[in-house]
Structure formats: structure tokens, C-alpha cells
Image (cartoon, rainbow, N blue to C red; front, side, top):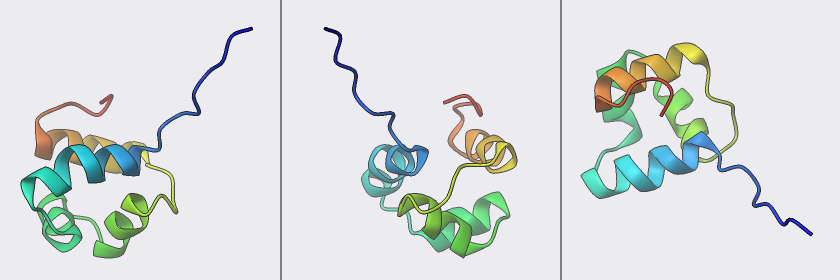
Length: 68
């Protein structure tokens, strides 16, 4: 029997791998990528999905690419 883990929400990755280690606030990230602060807040609370546009903006900001 194969047991699989549930998918990880992109907001969890943003929060734990980037924002917390770098000491970034949702407002600072939002301003840097040109989106409303509430979008980043909802994303890191895992309340909303990550859009392609926001993924591309975050990818450019963190130099990772939208796919990451």
C-alpha cells in the first residue's frame, strides 16, 4: 500500500522557506512584487490559492522562477 503525503500549500513554502528566514513582512513582500498586502497575508495563511501572476512575481523577486 502506497501512502502519500498531502500536497504542500505554496503559502507554507513562501512563509517557511523565504519570509521567516529572511525576516520579511507580508507588506514588504507585497510592495516589492506589486500586489496588495492582503494577497500575501492570505497566501501565507493558506487561505487562497497562488495565481500564475503572483507566482511569476514572487519567482522574479526571490530569483527562483514561477515553477518553484
